[in-house]
Length: 311
Length: 229
Image (cartoon, rainbow over all chains, first blue to last red; front, side, top):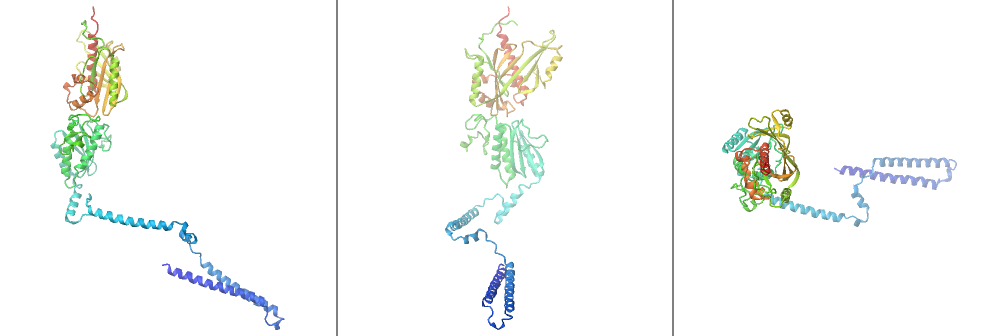
């Protein structure tokens, strides 16, 4: 792309040089004409006139040459500076710039980056555990992707029937369904006279759990379910934390109904939150809290610190 | 009524425990040579050792009104105020029925002077410190009877706020109270929760328990009076 521009620049420069030569020649002609004077002394009478006309001719030639050179010079601009790089060329002391060492380091760094990228891509290819089944290979992956995507796209009627089934299953646990956000169902679970839990579902997958006391209000002033505010009692805040970990424990995108049922069974174990002593230390209170943990499989009551020994 | 003086010495104080969720009225002899104030301070110190922090003071007071006409069976109305519900007034009949009203109810009692008259020297007041310890609220105070400002007994209230049913947290509260009080005190039972063991707690439950303890204080004060000639 830059080649035609370069050639015009070079041709301009060569004509300019030629013009400079011509100018020098014409100027030197003026001075030689003046110094030599008239060669033949025969025409002395008209000698002055001849000399003057010769000088005038020579000066006109100088003038025309100079104006030509000026015209060419006005076309040709000085080249734009190449920022700092062009200045480096001007500096004869090259050792003053750490450019070379910097360049070397950059090369080393780039090599390392390339090496690490290759290693990590190799490792990632080996580990195919991906929650979003977007890049699965083969028929099995296609199957799981189809099932996975359907678990949160369950029609509201199906969710309602599952919840009704669970509501009927337990005597002392009532579940009400509201849909303040459109499709997503929000369950308010009242467990005996012990606690109230707010569960946000996406399809049948549990998205969020918050536990509050029986005497705390789970509805805001505008009758909306209060999902976010934590309980004012330490014991229920702790139970909320445990419920969140249980939610992740029971998470099963392929069998969301089973996961929800398992979670509800686990939550139902909290009916004896205040009346069951710890399975391990046989005490009610440790750190001023009752046994807030329920075993995932056997539903035994444990204090938070006692459960590590139970697992 | 003239009564013979009981076998108690004067430095025996009743320690009455009002437990918000499980009611137990307990009396046990304070060690000889220890004053009531010392007992309260010892209790408070033990609660502070647990790690509880003082949040404020508390007061529960009780005025008693009797029927004006002496001919019929005497009937009483007890008007109680609790600093935990500062804008509320509780009126309790002899039958145990409790009316929960605004503070304006006090003015109403003045209007019906013709029917109910305030009993003199029947005012009972419990005053002390309110502690917070996690989800527990502990109140330790001394009880003052009538016009005298002398110490009549110690009252302890323990509330476990997250629970609403007594039968559920019976063992839990017993264990908690055991950390700062002797078992013999905790295991004596009062009448209030015997019938309402599975009921949901309401503020009047606290007040009824206080009234039960105040009545016991009055009885013990009467029994300690010297017999009239």
